[in-house]
Amino acid sequence: MQRDFLDVQLRHHWLRWTLLAWGVFAGWFLWQRWGGIYWLALSDTDDNMRLIQVRAWMNGQGWYDLRQYRLNPPGGFNIHWSRIVDLPIAGLILFFRLFTTPAWAERLAVGVAPLLPFAISMTAVAVAARRLIDARAWPLALVFLFGCSATLLMYMPTRIDHHGWQLAALAVTVAALADPKKARGGAIVGGASAFSLSIGLEMLPYAVGAGGILALRWVWDRAEAPRMAAYGAALAGGSAIGFVLFASNANYAMRCDALTPVWLSATVAGGALLLALAVFNPARREVRLVLALAAGAVLGGAFASLFPQCLSRPEGVSDELARTWLNNVREARPIYKHPLRTAFPIAALPVIGLIGAIFATWRARGDATRLAGWVPVMLFTALACGLLLWQVRAGPAAQLLAVPGATALGWVIFPWLLNHRLMPVRVIGTVGGFLIVSGLFAGLMIRWLPIDRPNAMQQRVGKANQRCATIPAMRPLDRLPPQTVFTHVDLGPRLITLTHHNAIAGPYHRNGDAILDVHHAFQGSPATFYRIAKAHGATLLLTCPNMAETTVYRARSKNGFYAQIARGQLPPFLEPIMLPPTSPLRLYRIK
Image (tube, rainbow, N blue to C red; front, side, top):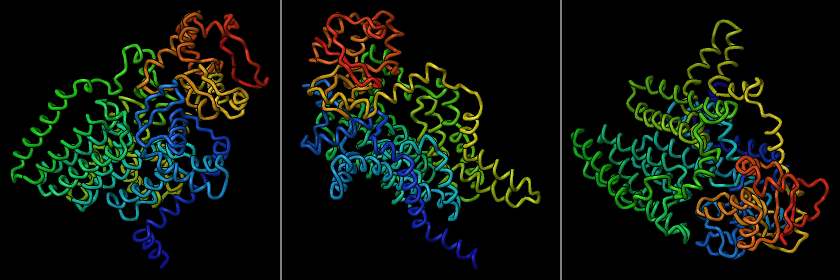
């Protein structure tokens, strides 16, 4: 009787239990991160910029005007985002204002907002496990999801940038790829891709991969035409709606780094071609293959001829900016260029998930329906593992996509271990198997073994990065009248979030000239700094000794302006301004 009750709950009431689990873990995350919420600890520059964008919009800045006028005033900084992710944050702020002060409403909003896409991701992961493995397998999938360390960081309170929403769209895509209802599954995949691209292009490879997978399914089986037709229509229509509703004024230019007319034309044309092929739907597989290849060649050729500027890196930065900044951004480097302490925990689960997906695909070879679901997931997981060799920023998505494959492995291995006749195998084997299949062993190994542990210098840098960006460190700056502060590129967004001052630059590629100005000023002579600072109207200089960015200045220019002031050699035009004795910052007036 008890087993039957549990079976009914797992099979038929999975959604209520999934949402209950989300509520429990959401409460845990809020409690665990309450200190960060209280101190508005937006540790990433993008999280700070997102909050500043929301504030600007709520204070009257135009819906389609996403320039940040407090960076590089008076013209402002061109931000390539859209307003989609601003909406839930602003809605939560307005809601919490009904019960508390504006400052606390903002804190609570940035704490709760990342948990909303987390609910979507949990539900989608549960759906994928039910469709691919077993109607009762979803709890195991959720357990493995909580082992995705890189993925969960994107959903933590105060992590309000767009990555959580894009990961939610990716999870929905995986569940929809396994949908037995063809038209519904295709429409959801197309809509999720359009939604993600309207936010940003970070998931463009996965959107292209999803379209390619659906086209291959149609080539193999013409009965898949309704799925591909619905996908093409949803992709084209959803992208057009997303562009009209959310594209900023700046994104009407022919840029390659957002859903501009460049990529809008590609998504609309690609969706229309797939819809046309699905409607035509020839009976012979060879003809379908030729038509699919011809459509891909036409789309690729047209894109290359019309938008040759987008065949290289989409940011479109200068060679100098790429060499001195963008190529050195940690998350933009391939995983094999990172220390083992960083790379191993990120890559372990994706590799296990790929093995599991291959294993599950092989096991499903006699079941056409299940095989049709597993092949796309296997290809998607392989794509994610391959993207890790391009940029480590693919880690959160790769771990998320590994969950179905890892769950499929666990669903076979764990019952065998738990039912083994030997108690040591049942106990030790199950624990060990769980640690291996979930990928948690990688994090434990790195934590307990002396592998690439931070040295003294790295610890000083980490401490400076953390302390300089806190409210107690920044609050004394507001005792001075509002003015433009010349500071580090990575400190600019945090400065304008916590104080009433303006800054020169932030780490956003469309504003390469301002970023290079900061680099040239800190690495050049004192006269060069003075000229650049005055050109930007800066009247204060703010530095954070030992911040990661400053180590680059000193390494590249050992006698440059920053290296000199770090040694205490102040030029005549700098006048120190006293800050509290415990302050990690250094502030100077530019006379």
